[in-house]
Image (cartoon, rainbow, N blue to C red; front, side):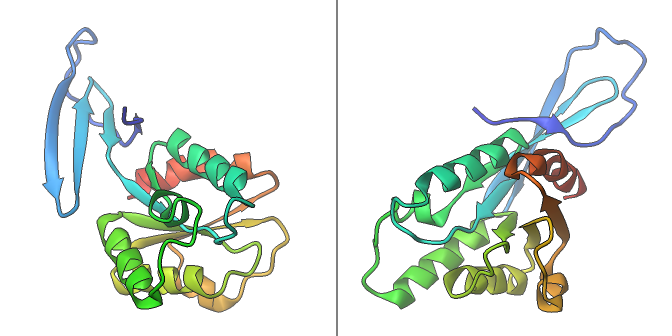
Length: 178
C-alpha cells in the first residue's frame, strides 16, 4: 500500500460530493498517481533514498525507525543497507557496490542523509552521486550539530530535530515542494 499526503490544491468544482478522479504520470523510474477531490490533489510514488551507516545489525532499529518516519511522511522509502545489503556485507567488490548504489539513487526522486554523526565514506559518496544526478537532497541533523558549508551547497532542505520523530512534518513539506 502506498501512503498518500496532500500535495497541492485545485478548484475542481463546487460539488463536495463529487467522486475522486485518478490519473497517472509515468516518469523515468517511477509512476506518480494523483487523486482529485474538489480542492485537493494527493501525490503518491515519490521515492526517498535513505542513506545509513553500515554497522551490520547494530543500527537496524535506528534505520527501521527512520524509514518508518519517511513512510509516515508520504514517501516510498528505500535504504541500501536494508533493502540491498540486508544489514550484511553483501558485496566483495566495492566498485560493484557503488555502481549498484548509483542505480538505486537514479531510481529515486530524492536522497535523505542525517549528518549528525558527520558522515563520510559511502554516505558522502551517495550524496555526491545524488547531487551529480540532479536529485533533491534533504539533510537532517540533531539540533546543535555544526554543518559545513559544503553540505549547505548540496542541500535542497535542511531539517533540524530535537527528537528524530520531529522530522515528519517537515518531510511532508519537502514532499509538497517536490
